Length: 114
Image (cartoon, rainbow, N blue to C red):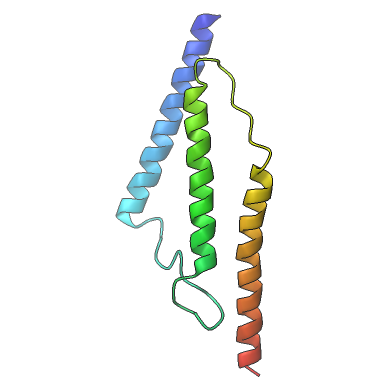
C-alpha cells in the first residue's frame, strides 16, 4: 500500500511541475496575454492602474502563498491543513472591494456619456 501512496505522490508532483512549466512557457512566449492585466477598464481611470485589481491580486497571492506554506509544514502528517475561519470573510471582502470599484467605475462612465 505504501508503494501506491508513493506512486500517487510522484504522479501529482510531476503533474504540477508540468503544469507550472507549461504556464511559465506560455507566459514567456506571449501566448498568455498579461498586458493591461491590472488596468482599469471603465471609469475616469480608464487605461490606468486599477487599485481594486491590484489589491485583489495581492490578497489572492498572499492567501495562496500562506496556504502553500501551511501545506509544506504539515506534509509529514499527510493531511491538508484547515483553512482559517477568517479567510472566507477576508477573501470575500477583497472581492467585494473589487466589485464595488467596478460598479462605481461603470456608473461614472455611464454618467459621463449622458
